[in-house]
Image 1 (cartoon, helix red, strand yellow):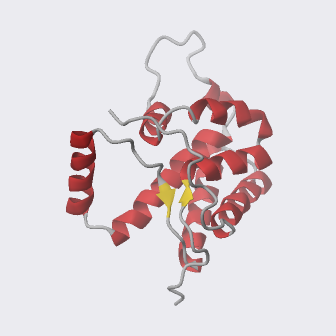
Image 2 (spheres, rainbow, N blue to C red):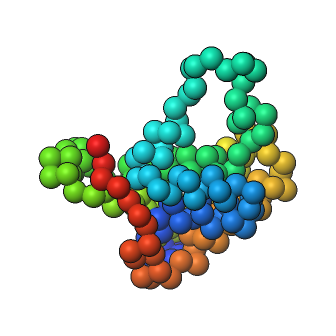
Length: 170
C-alpha cells in the first residue's frame, strides 16, 4: 500500500473547480467566477440550499441541465471532509472552528491535502459517481474526473498562495 502522497502541496478546492470547469465546461465559467467572490462556507451553503419558493415550472435549472460547477464543488468538499475525518480528531476540528469564530479571522480556503494513489482513486470514484447521478455522459464524467485528478496531482508548491479572495466567516 502506497502511503506517500503523489504531490507535495495542498490544493484549494475553489482552484480545482475553476480549472476543471474552464477546461471541461467553459460555458459555466461565469457561474464559477460568481461563486469565487464568496467564502467557501458561503458557496457550500448556497449550493446545498434547496429552493422551496414558488417555481412556475415546478423544477429548477439544475433539474433540466446538470451543471458541472456545483457537482464538482460539492463532491470535492465531500472528499475533503472524508480525507480530513480520517486524519483529524473531531474534537480538535470543532475547537478550531469555535476559536476562529471567536476571533473572527478570515477563513482559509478549503484545501485538499496531498493525496496517495489510493486517495486519488477514491476522489476520482466520487466524482464519477456524482457525475453519473447528475446524468452526465460517461465520457464527460471521465473527462471531468481526469481533470480533477490532474489538478490535484500536478499542483506546484506555492502555486496558490494569495490567489483566493475569501471573506470572513459568519
